Amino acid sequence: MKTFVYMVRHGESPKTEGNERTRGLTLKGSSDAQIVAQLLKDEGIDTIISSPYKRAILTLEGLARSLGKEMIVIEELKETVFIGDDKILPDTEVYPLVKKMFSDPDFSLPGGESFTNSQIRVVAIFKNILSEYKGQKVAIGTHGAVMTMMMGYFDPQFDLDFLLKTSKPDIYKMEFDEGVLTATSRLWRGTPE
Image (tube, rainbow, N blue to C red; front, top):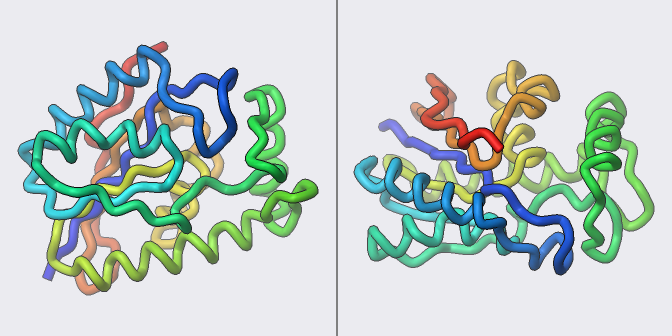
């Protein structure tokens, strides 16, 4: 019995407002979210699940509305906590940090979590989703680092180089047969900035 998971990385999000949990989408991110809804509306999605972060929810909100489905929000699908208090780190700090964390998975900043701990958290939830929604088509609103960790658990080609080539938003369709990843395809790369 095949299960399909659509990993939907959130759209472009401003790093100037709120915190990691509350920052939403830019105008471009909102526009791209409408394209995500159009691209996925005819895929036969059964279940829509999201990270609790506003930018991930907003990226799939239009799809949920167009399909008349409730979105399931799962706390453990949040992005890796890079630093305490949900502080926003500028890209100039995040990208070097992510590279360091991939090369040293047990490293973390004060109040943050290591990639090892983050991957344990998100992979456990992902396995639960595969089990609970077996045979369904599931869209997951997610983030770059944790998306890469979940995908990389099943196939090592999804690594730091993969992450650095993803876009905001981005959509990957993963096909599972009895919990084993059998195929992955990129459905859409977000529009250029």
